[in-house]
Length: 443
Image 1: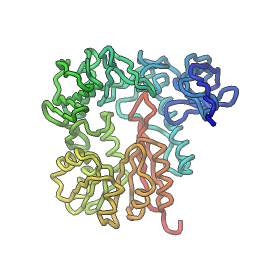
Image 2: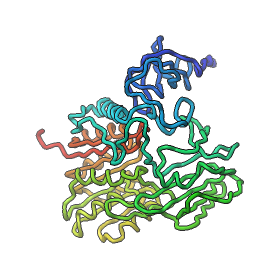
Image 3: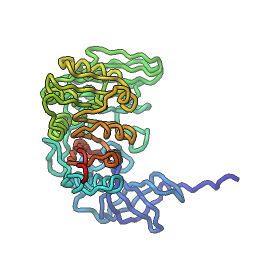
Image 4: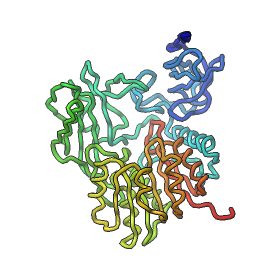
């Protein structure tokens, strides 16, 4: 027997009291009937009119936008960006909150995830509950730090204008200026010209060098337009997905600077998007691990070798570092970047597959910077068995971090210290560095 179709509630409006912040850039509220609403563009304690954007009768929860603010929070400001708000650009979650309030909200999310998924209080995690702003980001309410050094613009197929995706949508919000884009991106003028036939245009402004990269992805069968930018670029890359053709004009990489070293990053490969992020995270990791001369180390999910290089500098010629990374081009870059270190080795493949094959049974220090999903139980269990005196876990997702910290606890490790950094202002994203050490026997 076929189930009765459920009625969509999209467009329905509810007057609600807004509850606590939740992971993902929204707050929790309930309708008079008790149905849960995840409300964007709201702040805890406000009374708002929430319009449903996703959901149907009987669903576990509904998604909604706050379209009218009846009783505003003292932390609310007028969104500085003209493209922010219900139904508009989905890139920023907290344009309507003061900078200090944004960091408090992120701290509340971290604390809730630690408690729910790892059973840890902030005190037990060695964390004072604060989220630190990046250097230079301490701006007054109403001002926006221009921090994003890598911006991928979507192109509206009808107008050819560059823009950004709307929240949970493939629709494009054309923009003439992204306020969080770094000056090196804005100077290219991507938003000020049309891109007929293109699916996306990615702009990269390297930190510590004048390198600029633009990556064009044409739609199938489209002709490549004459590319005229306001500033010259070091790399113009074309990715033609239909034919698998990759054409590169200029150098196929940009040069990034961190911890006193230059790193080659090719083909739009991963690098932290905030200009202060790489140095901030290296400092936090090195202070936590405190690598010693002659020690052995693992750098897992090592990318182009940022942490491996920092550790190698500190363990010296008698020490050794093994990095593991799945991306082929990132491995090539890491090997190039760290070629001056005789006792650094980079292996390609997934951590859970490569690590057991190495035959390594013990190591002094470990750093892991896994993707958003986290390292997972199998990998954490393996790492806990290597007897490292310190482990540094770098996380861009507090839920994945909390889950993995729970697995580490099962493996005999406790959190010595946790630090949180607001390296993604105006968004719900936050970066954490947790330092772990073995639980003392008998403790």
